[in-house]
Image (cartoon, rainbow, N blue to C red):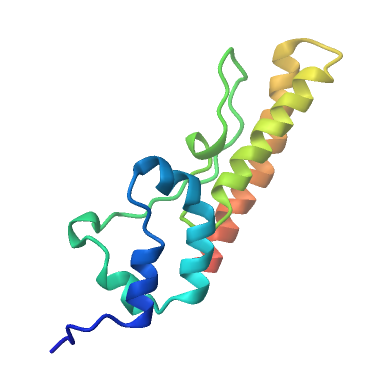
Length: 137
């Protein structure tokens, strides 16, 4: 049976839960760091809304050969979806930076710059997919 008295950890959860959406957004990073380092995980889970937890299927992309470069390209999870391992967003940002560099430094056509981006992105993007799979097993 659960005690009616609040533990110090539970009181800290309440203290770090700002009342307005704006205050929660502003304090988000600070609270997340404090909650993950200072609190008992069990207290945090007890305050979670059970209706907010759902099962999901994890999917990952399979390596693809390069396609014919056209007027549209892909980046991030649109091309190299990976399981959550902390590297997906970083890889998408790397894609964006590389595409930007290839376009701004181009000496040939725009399509040639995009082709150069796609070729390089496919190599490191699917290497990251493989790495995320290894880290999950």
